[in-house]
Length: 313
Image (cartoon, helix red, strand yellow):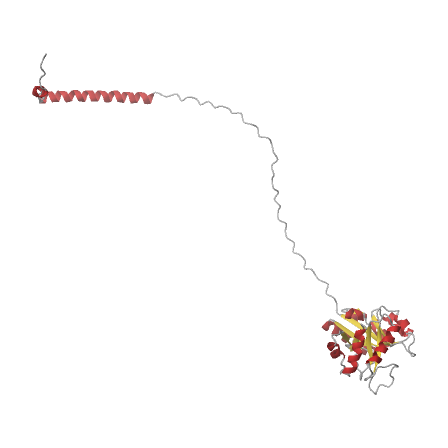
């Protein structure tokens, strides 16, 4: 069995065999290394030139035609665009403004002759009849010829007025007498609704007398028109105290029986109606008065001639 030599001894021997290269050997070695490197460079360069000169064929792309499912045709909603129309400015609404109202009352009516003349003059005149008595027996019958009429109730006048009517109411009369007077009138004129006073300068000026009269009229649902025969009349004051609506005369048209003056008074009544919205004119059944009213149609073009009930309404 051979004995193993220690490794340290062998290493020492190998190291001793390595010799350093001489300068000549180094030059020779480097020369070969340079040649080998240069050879490798030429080979690499040639390969690159060859690869650039050769054209590569690009494979043709094959397109596959796909069958698509046919989509059924459908109606397509296309909204209609409305072109804006040229706006036409709206005409202002002209409201029919009611004309001022004028009521003409003809007092002291008692005969068929007067009745006929009133109807010939205008259908928009309201007659006021005397109550039925021995002097005026036909007034109830005459009143039926009119749609609207009044009773011309006699009231006490001053001492200068001598021709007083029968059955006149006087200051100091008890309310029972006034009540009986109105009852008798209603018996003759069952459809009566409106009353105005004949004369009455004394009676109308007395508060207590007017209070009793208007209280009775209110009880029977009768409307009162104050003829206003005197400026000191208490009718409006009493009516307010009784919570009662009454009407008041604005113009007397024929205190003077002259056509020009009557026209002037009618024009005054028209102007009052324009100012207040309504007016009441009182005249009498004189031929000249009724004829002037008939001829004055042009005066009434700006007002509406109405019967007295239209002013109460």
